[in-house]
Image (tube, rainbow, N blue to C red):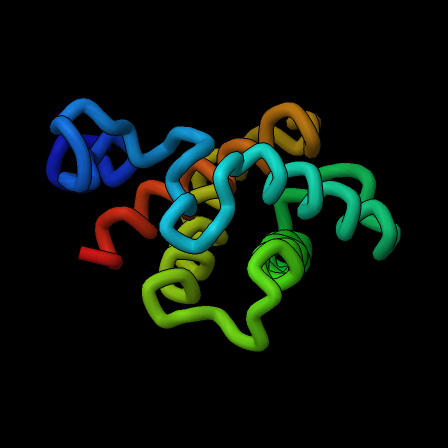
Length: 129
């Protein structure tokens, strides 16, 4: 990935110029002070749905995006995703698919979901501007 497509290290421009949009505070403008909450909730939703291991398939990636969406909606008490959150969720699904395409043994909780969050947070910072 080159700098022109590396959304994960963007400065969101809202503070002192040193913020990393992949940090756990990336969704604080939505009332989510700690992104680890989204990671945890996403994992529990996947497990509750019977998905306790990563699969590098389009079907699994869609379930991952859905679990993240439901985690976000629960955490924010919202009924639908704002467009500047919905688009990053879709983009994160694609990027995680690329990142883990050749790693079917990737750890769901420790690697895949945090990567999904990192990508979603980076795109979120880009799209909300």
